[in-house]
Amino acid sequence: MQEKLIALLHDTREKIFSEGALKREVQPLRGDEIPIALEIPTRKGHGDYATPLALSLSKIYKQPPLKIGSLFVERLNQSLPNFLEKVELAGAGYINFFIKNDYWRQTLLEILKAGEKYGQTNLGFGKKILIEFVSANPTGPLHVAHGRAAALGDAFTRLLRAIGFTVEQEYYVNDMGNQMTLLGQSVKIRYRELLGEKIELPDAGYKGDYIIDIAKALQEKEGDSLHDRDDAFFGQWSYHALLTRIKQDISAFGIFFDRWFREASLYESKEVEASIDLLRAKGVVYEADGAVWVATTRYGDDKDRVIARQNGEMTYFAADIAYHKNKFERGYDRIINIWGADHHGYVARVKASVEAMGFPVDRLDIVIHQLVNLLRGGKPVAMSKRSGEFVTLKEVMEEVGVDATRFFFLMRRSDSSLDFDLELAKAISDENPVYYVQYAHARLCSLLRVAAEQGLKYDEAVRGVGEEYLDLLELPEEMDLIKHLSFYSDLIKTAATRLEPHRINVYLSELAGKLHRYYFSTRVITVNTQQTLARLSLITAIQIVLKSALGLLGVSAPEKM
Image (cartoon, rainbow, N blue to C red; front, side):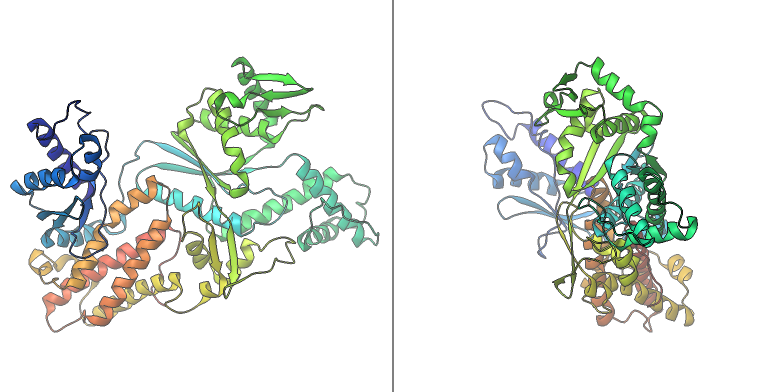
């Protein structure tokens, strides 16, 4: 519907300009630089859609918005398309559209025909996207912030695939550097403590009982004869143990990466060296103070960055440069990185390096997600003893379940902090948003089972409803539900293109609320067979959309609760 209205407004704007109805001393670019935005009015009586186009054009033509709006409304009402009831001018110059009920009812037939594919498009057909997310250092278990990144990345993937893109998911494994040395030292100290030695763990060492668990597992597997092995041995053994745990947690969360990309592979394949050579050929590498630098300030960074220290050791940034070179050379049309709030300062330098190498920086999107505030009954949750510094994703999943964990992680914009209340996520009540939505789906499944027991089968309702039956859906609550269903297709496009899965959460909560109210106010199965079939078709369409939308979040749609 939005596409139809935008096309209609565009054509009307062309007509107004061609007629010379709007003039000024210096003719502007006919307003073509002003995008046509559509909104869904929050107040009843303001139509089904509204546009502030007249207000935007008034700034160009120096004419009152009401005058410009009246020109649009007059011409639109002269030849209304068959799906429009009327067009009105309201407020300071908003143009309100009223869609015919018969058109809205046709949405049900579209949903029933398309089934689970309703709302999907081929907008991104033929284009490839790489999403890299989580990428937590393998020096400890995944915590709740990593969980939010995981939920976001998977939701981005599902949304973009729904509009036709080919999407691959990737986890970048930082398996090199000082962190691996510290990990090895920490586990070695805990191992030697198990042998009876008394050794102080350095302040920079990794703490938490999970380090002790790794040391115990190593002792059980290899015995007590490893006290003379070097830190590198303990680091590698611990790295593999922790990476295995990370993979298990990711799998339990319902995510399966297409690729686990090791940082070390960039050195093994000489790609770090090749990326530095490329930058040197571009004239942006120089030496100063015994170190090697990249002149990222030439491309918007606040200062130049070191890629090789005085001792010859490469920095993490050197590998980051090579990694992004590798990504672009794989031929993706778009590359998306999802990083935590602590990586905000890395955005400018990475984008600068991409531009310096000659790659199209506009194809790289870096999404920064904010922190998760874990609560219990409104009060902050204390840190986990086993992790040492944080509550793990596994602990949250085990307490509230995967569905609730995913849903809660996606309830807010990625750039907003998130309050996650464990008690609320477990509550079996309308206060729990995921329970509220899932129960709506289960309620519909129950209703359809009852209808089937009475001889009104699901497929019979789908095939048996024609336009004459749909006319029986005339209650305000029914039309409200149908309109909400019709918004779903546009919603998927918006949520996908803007990378805003929280829009799906909001939509689901609103749809569930409308459904619950309709369920308690209206009998679906009545003595009137035609009316019953019409309402069962509405119920079936709602069920399809609920299940589809939950699936975009990676949340299940239970048939019984």
